[in-house]
Amino acid sequence: MIKSIRYFLLISLLASITIASAINGVGNYLLDEQVIEPYLDAQLIRMSAVLLTFNQATISNIKMDTELIETISKKQTHLDEKIIFQLWDNNGKLLLRSHNYPHVSLKNTPLGFSDQLIQGEDWRTYSTYDEKQKMKVIVAELYNLRRELVDDIASSNANILLITYPVFGILIWFIISFALQSITRVTSEISNRASTYLEPVQLTEIPVEIKPLVAELNQLFIRLKLAFERNKRFAGDAAHELRTPLAALKTNVQVAIKATNDSDKNKALQKVIESVDRSSHAVAQLLTLSRLGEEESLTDTRSVDLHKLATEIIAFLAPQALEKNIDIELAPPPHDCIVLGNDTAIGILIRNIVDNAIRYTPINGEVKVSIVNVNRKIILRVTDTGSGIPVELRERVFERFYRILGTKASGSGLGLAIVSQIATLHHAEINLSTPPHGAGLQFDVAFPKYHA
Image 1 (cartoon, rainbow, N blue to C red):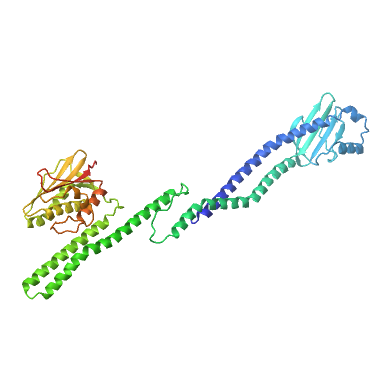
Image 2: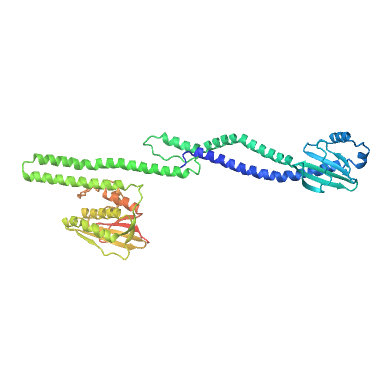
């Protein structure tokens, strides 16, 4: 695990520079040998050409004793101690030699370039014969001179690298620090926030590399904000919805306590039970609505058989319909009634729609449930013979706690809000209309058709 991006980049970049410089140094060392050798060979050729300017006539006019030869060679040349030369005539007579080397005959050195071992040392020699002057020139150079030149160049390069290495480190440190300023800025912006401030972080002047991180962080802030708002709303909704049944519960308990006969007491206790039932229903609806936040996405989705699920829900609600002598009917299924979704959530949707239909349908009425396959939609259709919903109120009934005035059926005003939320999560469309027979309400929920 990388504990520090800054130190990781610093060490990695310096290590990379070191490796690259080492490879470059070795390469330069090998190349320098190849470049320097031809250059120094050319120097030997030029030196032999210079020596040939001492033509035989000039040299023969001079008394060639050893001391004079030493003097001439010293005055005529400014050669390095590691370079020697000799001039020979056709008769095998030494005409001129370098002063810095003992009497070693190079007369038999082959023409051209060659490598010679002279007194235990390696020499690079160049020999040429001038036909016009009848002179042979031999120039030799110690191989150590070439190696020293290459070593000096490599050493200079290494010294430069060592000198610039701290500069590299400082520059890399400042470059990395500058590059990480955006992360530091985002960190500072988040650390200085109040715990309740969940607005998105601004994405301006943020490098593209960390924009996905900041974008995901903003999405988290949005989800947290919606979750906090949902919890806050739940507390307010619970206080709003439970205030009335709890007040009625308290009143009915007080009536039961003050009742002087069993009939009045039983009536009051029955009211207490109704208040408790209403409170339980409201709490259950509030919890369901709280779990279905707008920021939630569907999980555990699978293929759901709407007809089969509707059969189970209707069987569960049948006793409630029988109490009002309502005829509840489920039409035969079409060829295809499979949708993709969460079966628990869709079950809640069907139960709330059918439950509302039973609640708002008068005694001896009818409720009909059917699954319709139209084009690319699977429609859950619930039709009742109740009083219906005026056209101008069909949007408002999906608001939380909204109930149409004058309705006598009990309820919390949350059922259709839950239905709307579940439909949205399933990308389903809701449509309210008047049935063809002209009375009641037709409630359609159109789900996208599932293609396996």
